[in-house]
Image (tube, rainbow, N blue to C red; front, side, top):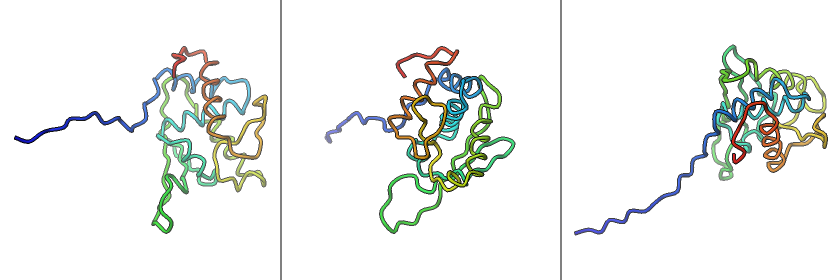
Length: 168
């Protein structure tokens, strides 16, 4: 007889956020007090919609923006680290413009992206989420770090009128 070893393999997939968190981001995208927070809320909601990793967005130029009547799209010029010389095609990041709480949650993302494309300083950025200043009322012309983005995401969800389990 053969021995069979049954082992538990830990799942490597990301855990989807609860619907309440998505609704909270949609609410903040429409009702946050500053344009910077509204942009960040719509950015994080867009990331959920297209299943983008934060690192994907750090390799996505605002110039790759494309909007249809049903989607908001960008193209990541790099997704995962690959071997030098490997053939690589840009990865489309496409989020449908469906909503669970607030219509037009994507409006601030689209408006700020268009404004960044007209600005001679930010038009050549190769990242999507600029770093906010201390009061989150303006952007600093550099990419937002992963740790700052997570703190920002949690703060936005916590200040929403939609109740979300604080353990996320």
